[in-house]
Picture 1 (cartoon, rainbow, N blue to C red):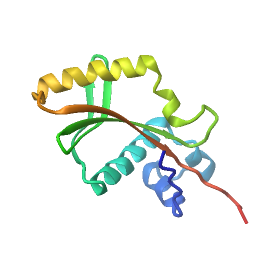
Picture 2 (spheres, one colour):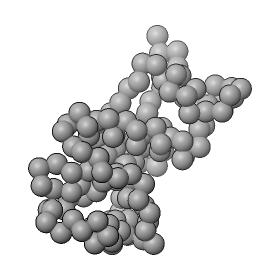
Picture 3 (cartoon, one colour):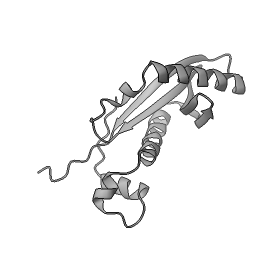
Length: 137
């Protein structure tokens, strides 16, 4: 897991929240917005690591593939899990057997539709935890 502590957390919150929200409401951003921020950070991180992101949010009847990236002859299907706390466990723990099965089926559809037969396949999970510590000193 890469644990991201954002020194300008309020800027990130403000950029993804509606105008006029109070800080309390900002902290309770909807899950979709939190996920979008997480995916943007992961795409940047993957690019920095030499991956080429070829698709995002690819939808199939089995679910969505968050990020599809290629590096050194391998196609990586990256499931992004972002959390703002640990009340529901670690982010990656949400990728249970059922979710893994759906990701495999969705990846098979993707590979067939894009004709990526010559690539090795990898399934990755990017865990992000956004933490904000108010009045910490």
